[in-house]
Image (tube, rainbow, N blue to C red; front, side, top):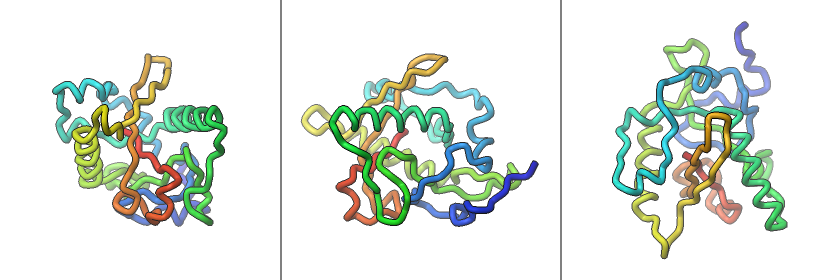
Length: 183
């Protein structure tokens, strides 16, 4: 059965930035990115801080809805412990803090009417992650480590604050809302 675009038409414009819009995490257009075993095991990014490097080809776009929901739930839980509620990231966007933002994707010619993140965008985000890891230190903690329990074992999620206008279509004024990027 062919995926129906319908109400998600506005999400299908190609962009190099994450959009401040909520989306159904299990959208059929992205299913091929996480429903196949790519033969890559998740990496504990803490090992990267101690000398191990990742080649460009080691990075894939895999918006697994279960993992995204687990990460969002853990962030919301932490906010509740701090007696905070998720606030809108941007007026009229419908996206709240702790919700995944619509990724910079385009139609993938290898998968018909499916979407994927272009390799140049993956490379851009990889460079940002490496840069943030180089800046991170005890005196300047800018990387956050989130441990997410899964059936195969603990997943290590690295999160950092993003340069809002550089990586998203959210204006700088919304930065106070603490937009986080995860890898």
